[in-house]
Image (cartoon, rainbow, N blue to C red; front, side, top):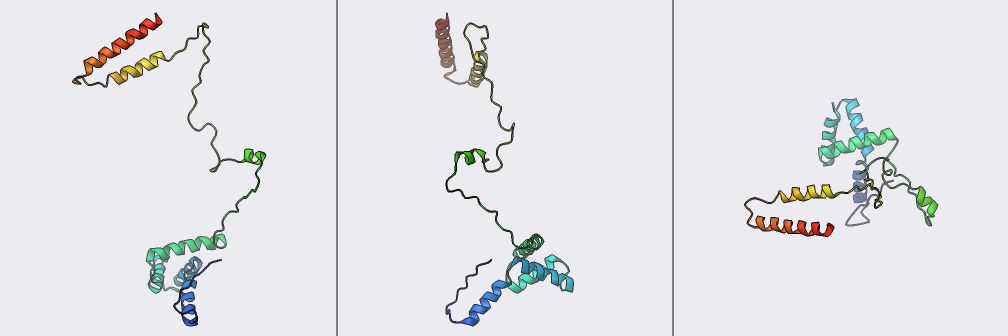
Length: 174
């Protein structure tokens, strides 16, 4: 179903209303497709593009717009009419059971997709499984410290501060 709004200066001018409505009736995708098809069968147009060019000249639309309408009309004829929207499920009072069964939009998350979570081992003091991340942190710290330029005027002061921090930390553990 289509809705057409016709604007006229005089609503009683039936000729103007009729002329405007006839103009819109011909601008249907299926009508354009069928018109182009007939033009090719009769021989007034050799191709769909040439038919679109001629229809565009008659209607005042651009050639690309008419070609697009012809393609859409072709698809609509194949599918048996204009595409219909999918029915929408409306639930007034959704229950927890329904919500649990629903999947997120887009079909949900594919199993195994995304980042793998790092397994965190539970540390039991005195068990001998002293798995720490100390060496990783030291490597990151050194990598960042190596970014300090040699010609940086505060380089020596920064290195002295690191040495002081390391000595304090060493004293805490001793």
